[in-house]
Length: 337
Image 1 (cartoon, one colour):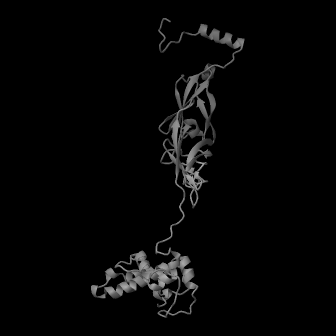
Image 2: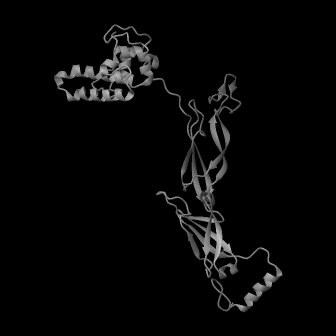
Image 3: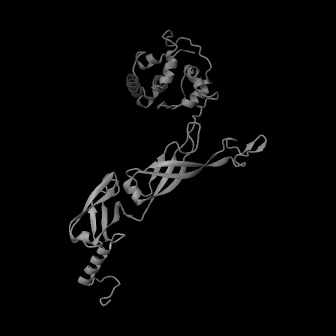
């Protein structure tokens, strides 16, 4: 079996960089591609093209190149070489035929199979990589207020996982697995502290890594679906949010300022004198995130309210105000009531 000097094949030095190897391969692959040569030259061209592809396969892979370089520089191209422990060259050719645009059938050389065959299983099939566990799914409801203001939300979900005692088989040598009752799986409860994302939206699915099913290469992810629901204060209208602000009647006699909770702190809203109950005030850019990166608006609906506890003097003043004011009727009330 002949030694293959891959550096000579690509026309690069033994200390060539990855970029130099890449450029050399691209140029040679273009020059020697079988489709660019006459049919009469195809056999020779395909042989050269496969040698170029084989050299690139080794020298562009750090692990293969390190192993190849361990042979030293004493071997010459075409010199007899006795490798060891490789796979059957025919099986290796079947594995790599056509890789890298090789075309035309066939595969890499016997030398390649002897050098790198032990990187694969005994029958010439790549050893399977360890897999991550399957993803788990869960769903939670967030109030519109939580979505608007952000922060953290703690929740608990149950996930069905393979039984650790019987490795998911459901049985032991003595009989059914007592840990899972022979089912091969158990229900586990997980507690999660979720940081509510700034761009949260209804129906959004968050991918939380490391919280899914266990696996040889680590656990999968938890796919968490969010549903936004109205609460006692906030209501959602697209990406705009509506909330009520309750003030005392006498606050409408002059300009009033109120602080409103928004994401990241508070915003000040000005309520002009003479504002009518039910009137809406807009705080621009204080709603939920939009797909274009902007935010919706926060609408404040003005409502009237009284302090929970009134002094006797306050009660008398309100009574006097009622006696001196003209009746106000609306809604279901009739003019004569």
